[in-house]
Amino acid sequence: MKKTISGGLLILALATPAAAQTATVRVTVDTAKAGAVIDRHIYGQFAEHLGTGIYGGIWVGEDSKIPNIRGYRSDVVAALKKIHVPVVRWPGGCFADLYNWRDGIGPRAKRPTRINVHWGGVTDNNAFGTHEFMDFAELIGADPYVSMNVGSLSPYDSAQWVEYMTSSEDASLANERRANGRDKPWQLKYLGIGNETWGCGGNMSGEYSASINARYSTFVNAPVSMGMVKVASGGSGNIGDYKAFTEAMMKGGGRLQALSFHYYAMPDNGRSKGPATGFGEDRWREELALTMKMEGYLSDVSAIMDKYDPGKKVALYADEWGSWYTQEPGSHPGFLFQQNALRDAEVAALSLNIFHRHTDRVKLAAIAQMVNVLQAMILTDGPKMLLTPTYHVFDMYQPFMEATPLAASTSSPEYTKDVPMVDASVARGKDGKLWLALVNTDPNKPAHVVTNLAGTGKGQILTGPAMDTHNTFDKPDTIHPVAYKGGSAEGKAVFDLPPRSVVVVTVN
Ligand code: AHR
Image (cartoon, rainbow, N blue to C red; front, side, top):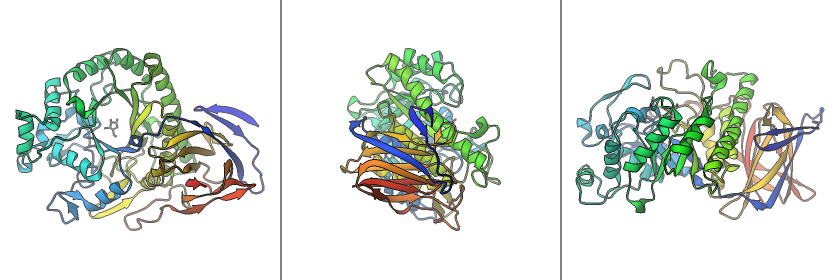
């Protein structure tokens, strides 16, 4: 028996019965040991002006032949409503730091056309602006998270944007908003103070970025009753010095309310990212190992935050995460359009499990991105739409929103270094039921999971015949969750997990 420590998990490698090739895994739950509630905002999504993420993916305009509600695709809206998206982050990303909010208000025909220099150099006619975003968030029932431009606009401009969105006074900006069709102020729940200030947001040092945060957050305010959270731009697992950056922000960023963190599971650090489908087991293994690194990053960042904020008043927001591969051949350069396969379902489930283990700090996360970009929830092609395996994981995991995580120790062989063959998350749902999520990361071997929980479990499973099983516009339902039932042995719940599977069950 080999013992290794991985991302805070104790992994005990047990002997695998060679004949059946089924590994036995034990999941022991301590129902008396509860963590901080899983904030539903960790199920958030990111929607940037990038490729067809907004135009075509969400917004088609009122005159489109594609069925729409006031310009928003009806099929996409219905799919997002079904999974109760808690928060949407917009307009970027890198896009945000060259965005002028004034371009996106007023009559659409009069709005200027700008070049999206970050993403493919294409034109953006600003048809989707502040009103369209805030109304979209309201339509799908999500909290809006607006990232302001601190890279190239002044604090004065940003303060005006926030006043425009949130003021109920009889004052010029609120009256301008009313003249543009919106009487009531919007409830602006989250305000991003820049994005990746260490990179596309201004190439700032940690110390400079901290001063910028303190300055902008002094001047940009919403009415106190709105309870708007200001989110400072933080480090990223994709840059070497994320610890120093975090330290600088915590030390000099002013009175922080939340600090962001980004991490993409990007193979070969972006040099040779590889395809989203049609890959071998080496790429499956690498991607899942990269995904598990999030656990260590969150622990490292949390430890630094603990030093400055032992009371855990400042939240950590993983507001960009997901897989990043080589974009699909033939797609527009810079559009970051990638397919989404069973491998991505595993990336999603493992990441959500990791967030469930860090609820003391992690109060919000946003997958990158919502539609047609990177690890998308939804893909569209003209009038066609499909739900990705990642979407299905978010759907299956809904009972974990606002659930209370319970301590669970997993004794599992490793599939590969630092990746347990079975990763588990257990929580008491808001519905009072016990929910269990199990991920079998091994693409070849089944696992037999033995728990200490009385009863049997039933729920749903997501799996497929190949590591890259995915939906296409012609066959949009190739992979979707199906009903799943566990068994019981000596009165305890047991589960047989096929290779490469994600299972969510309730046990009773
Ligand atoms: O999600 C794509 C890009 O990745 C975002 O614009 C940026 O913040 C990150 O580097």
